[in-house]
Image (cartoon, rainbow, N blue to C red; front, side):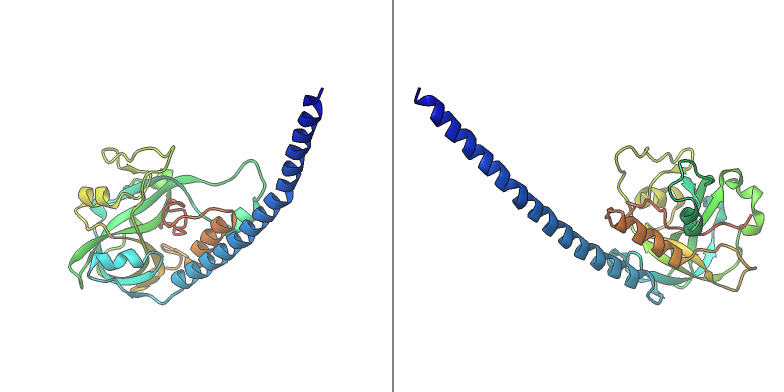
Length: 252
């Protein structure tokens, strides 16, 4: 009969410890949320300062680029349209449209590709890869968008992007079909003969000036997408967003 009181005492003790865990856990989660918010605000401020900074010349040393992701850089040179790469499938990022369609089950987004073109930097003597922006699937073939194939030497501003590693459930790149699902700069460089240097172009800064609306790539819209991703709880340094920040649309 003495075992029953002992068992009851053990049950009461376990219940007391369990009830104690509730406020301790709540306090811990609250503290974590506060620290997480501070981290997000710091990350947002850092991304904003990088994206909105004045462009600097592209450094000749590729190692310096490791500390320049999301920083605008300026280059001078010409495109080699014969070696275009296509990052696909992609959709045109439009913050205004996304705000209008927020919460909808269906979406009116059009599928297509980002056009990545080798760019010979005449001042540096190196060839880099430039994400020129979005084209709908029916315009992936360059023969259907000859007006968008910029010729001659131009000054260009773009945002530095680093290489990506393939994420779970993302298909492998298919160089034979010229379908690229993520930025593998070494592989892209081998196919095109370029250096493993990649920028997202901002054609507002293109000189000589192009006709209005050619290749618009808005850094502000890119920043909105970055900040939106961070506020939704995601954090990464590269394609995390797998290139979704490019706002340009190649003229067709």
